[in-house]
Image 1 (cartoon, rainbow, N blue to C red):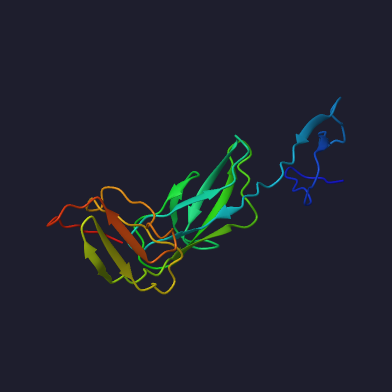
Image 2 (cartoon, one colour):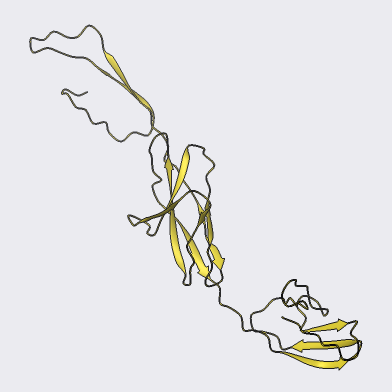
Length: 193
C-alpha cells in the first residue's frame, strides 16, 4: 500500500486498521507487523435557536446539546470570527439592534468540530406606542377608563397600584376599557395600561 516513514490516509468515513512492518536496507523484514487502529468519529451537529427581544435587553440563545461530550462555542460570524461565548444557554450582552450569533459544536473527546455553524438570529421587537387613557365616566362608586386601540397590540394589562401588579382590563384582555369599582365620593383612581 505504501512505503516510507509517514503515511497519510485517504479521507476516511469508517474505522480502519492499518498494519506496518519494517524492512532493513539489506531486505530483512521485521518478524511481525504493528497495527495502527484509526477510529472515525462523526462530526458533531447542532441547531441553534434565536430569540425576539425588546430593545435594551439581553437575549438567551440555545443550541441543542444532547451529547455529554459536546460543548457549544458561539461566534459572531458563520466562519472565522470572534468567539463570544460558550455553552448553552448563552446570554448575549444588552442589544439594541438585531444581531446573528453562530453556534459551533465541538466534541471534547475527539476534538471534532461541526462542519457548519448554526445561526441564531436575535430580532429586536418594535416598541408599541403607549395608550392614551382618558376617563369616560366618573361617579362614585365607579370610574371608567378607556383608550383607543394601539396599532400592533394584541392584549392589554392594567394596574391600579402604580405598576406593582397587572391584570386584564375589566373589558377582557383585548378590551380597551377598564372599570374601577368600590370608590367613595371624592376618592381618585389611577391606572397604568
